[in-house]
Image (cartoon, rainbow, N blue to C red; front, side, top):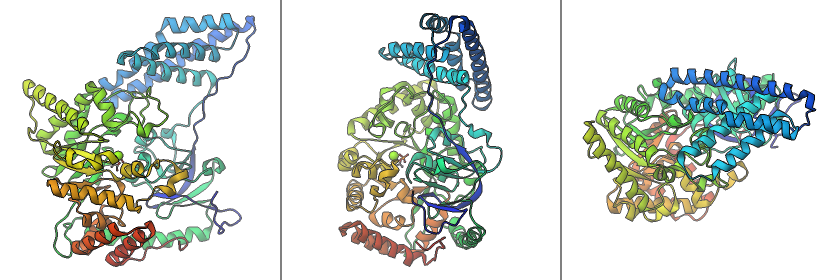
Length: 596
Ligand code: PEP
Ligand code: MG
């Protein structure tokens, strides 16, 4: 565990990966999920009736819990979403499942939990071989419901994030995007996790919610005790458990120095993104759709460059209806009109695995698996609902549609065909939409980067997803903290690939924007414009800093920098060039806990 020598008797200082900027301090809320281990116990014949009675009670309690969830979802999201839980209730009514379990107790003489698990596994196994979307959904329902029922029978509870009673620092081994999707309404001051990296989707969500976050802390969560106080420094990746008075004092100083710097950034926020050599650039927002509405007011953005739509799918089991999606897209489009909004189609899979809809697709290698456009093209019924909702929203402003995880021309062609089908349907139904809606491909897989000239024949624009492009180019899993040091944006291969994509875009007169996390990093923003980015798209809380940088730089200098960087042969040389440029342009002295 990387514990620094500054640790005093009580306080302990840990170093992880700085994932979302800011400093937070508060009591810790430990969120450790337990793997469900189902014990096997022999039950004497005279106690078997009690075992069945426990089963009936468990069924009742589970029914009650699902009823509560259903009512909550109905209130928040409507009947369509809530009806998913009807399927869960049906599993609990399934006579065959119940009777088989009761029989299993009589025949095997084992406890009810063990018998239930065995019966459920038999059902799941039998259903899994049937290639039918409806049956697959039932498998997912059986799995969800039996897990809940088993937890009730065993008296186990996962700590519930919504039960945080006071503003706290959330500590976890890992946080799934589904957990993160529920963070907005919670009292989370800061987040620390053992696993994860800067570009995991959970971290991106934390950043968009402006919650300071440090990840890659190895086993820290198991060392924490309820009642510990934790300080999170998301600027430098430092976590202090039970900080001393002098550390708190030092952080007081850091906070006020940072605030003074932030004031300067904020002053630039609503000014145009014009460089010192009078070149007008575009800075747009990456949004998840769950940001507080206030962040869009006077955001200083020229529009939305990436609307990640997964949040809509992660917050509930199943798929949101066309209507729910349409309302969500329309409200963003109207808010930004006449500025453009690029809506990205569903990018589930990888580290974004919902509890319901896709839970059956368990994969050894999810980032290389059934993700995003691959899933959508195999599920046109899900994809078309989304395309229709996006098209309908396009009647209310300037909308572009963006396909994620493109690896071949065929995928873009197939997606465009479905889009055309949706247009025809909407026309017949009398719905308005933008007939000339622009269609873009994300360039985030090396194969797409290499065939940008071919993709250009079927696309109106490109958006580079550097988070995935780097992971696939370097074969470094973007959420694996053990190899986080190999996730190297300064690798010459990354620079050459970026340059190649921009050159291809220029040759085909296709605008190329960047929406990965590099775009919002002041170390790279100048470089990306210098390489030829038409727009950078980034989270709202880093926008003021990037605007500040753009207004203080000359595009001609950024272009010089880009030439040098593309010619450089070593990551450390590239990093030095970038740091020198950033320091010269920004001229700021950032405070640190210890000088790094
Ligand atoms: C990317 O890969 O850079 C990107 C913007 O998409 P996401 O982070 O959602 O995968
Ligand atoms: Mg991506």
